[in-house]
Length: 180
Image 1 (cartoon, rainbow, N blue to C red):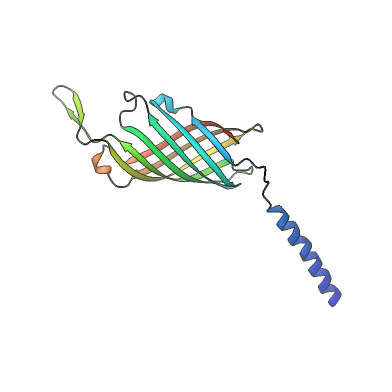
Image 2: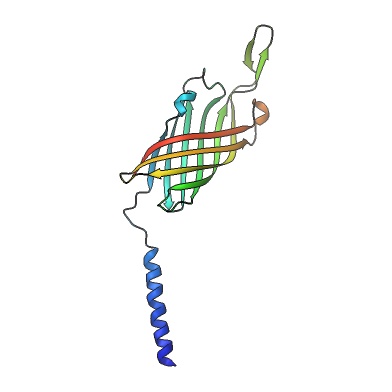
């Protein structure tokens, strides 16, 4: 009986040592990404993103978007959007993902249209507001560290939606970047 118990304890210790060995994180794992949205210039804006990988299944990031051409994008001025992502792929922080995001945004005030001379003007000045939302997407990584990502998100303004022409926000991206 004592020998059987001793053998069981020794086998259990080998399995627990192996399990501990699998949880060690590679200290040379690249955990930072910088990305640019390549379709945002089509809407008269530029968007840059920094993402910090927490482990192989999750990350935190922040996106900055600013509008440089008001003739194309006449509502939005800028946004700053932190997010949390959960990855479902087999590789380290890649594949299909779901995200939750917050957003601090500046939007033009309500527009009033005059039908006689077809002019428009804003009733309120620029409105700063917060928003929350969710998004989905996919990320692919090359061996050399280049990142390709597609994502879409949808959210709602929280505080000042009545001072603007809409109460929703969206994030659409085709991002290209580098993991370092």
